[in-house]
Image (cartoon, rainbow, N blue to C red; front, side):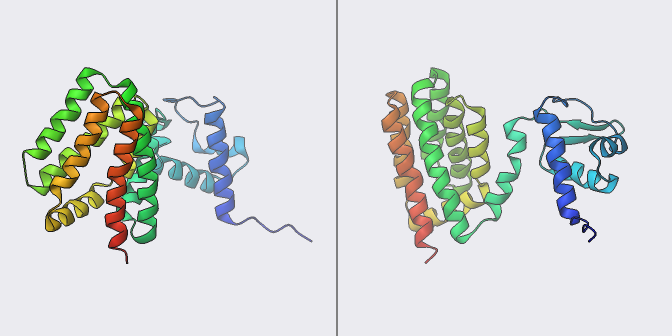
Length: 232
């Protein structure tokens, strides 16, 4: 019996995995130009059309980049670039999937705050405080949203882990947070959430990792509970 031809998607996936292996094993380095599509197809024993699809897929994922008139290159392979698509997932999620993302964010925000409490510099602490002061100085949801995002990002950066920061950036959907802030405005709970941010700042200032972990988890947990109540 003749062997059936594997589905096209399977061949393309194999091409993707083989290209990833070339990169992970150091045969293709960050910033290096890829061999031609034809040469890669011959080298890996895959059709040019499947190789083209694999290159396109890895370009969308931020692993490769097309430079006009120059060719295809391996990117810097920075976490921020590779995790950029996570933001699209967060923006488009709703219902149970959005709550799952909030559960992940709660755990990671708590971890970032705990690490930041041990590592934060005076300059970084001042930046976090600046954003909280700005949140107290306005009732405009748009301005509060901007400083809320900046507050949490400053805490994540202070943790000193670029990959963790990139993941939290991806989970921090501006679209979703705008919905939350509009809801908070309607319910008059701006003061409550400002107080939650204050508790995080106080724990960072005290350099108390466990207090920072608890404050961040409680804050995101409040948002999560608010969201769950609106899913019923």
